[in-house]
Image (cartoon, rainbow, N blue to C red; front, side, top):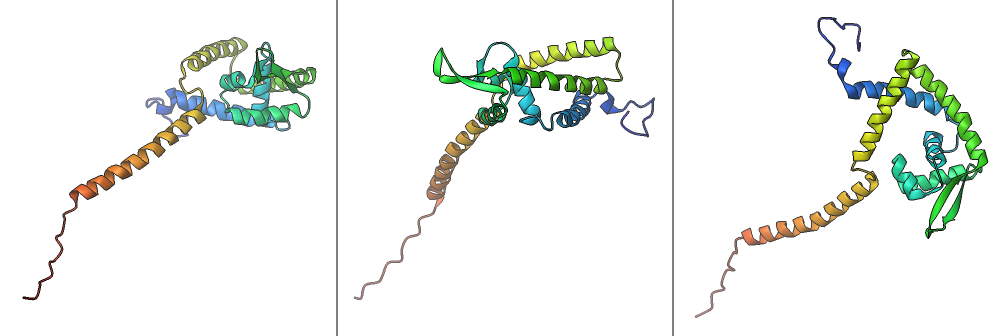
Length: 200
């Protein structure tokens, strides 16, 4: 499967490697999706944000960032990109004035529908080796796996994890230096100074 020298009596170890298979499909999808969304505000991530914001009532930026796995700072820039052409609008959260809700406008929904059809064509091309029934089954199974993985994934904010690791490292470094200095001091041999001889 992975090369011209593949022998039927010797299965290729990559043939049942989930990571390799997912990687091949993912790279093909990303290349085609980037082409289909090249001129869309924010690119593929902008479309992903618009999809999440279109799903249900208006939500705050933190909830959307957590759902699609994007850092809140990056999300702010993406919302700015979508706000310029009038695809989304921010408004204060009545329940908490400190939060801003993200609403999809009519123009945003129209743009999303247009690109959704383009991505459907990308998906159909990518799954061209499957029958309609097989394609539907694959989508159903992938959705089940994706929802399960998202529910149990403890790394909801990788930037937060990196910040914590950096903080822990910064705290540990001075402690290590103090411990090392104390070890050097405790292991240092005191050398008595030479006493000057007094003249008799």
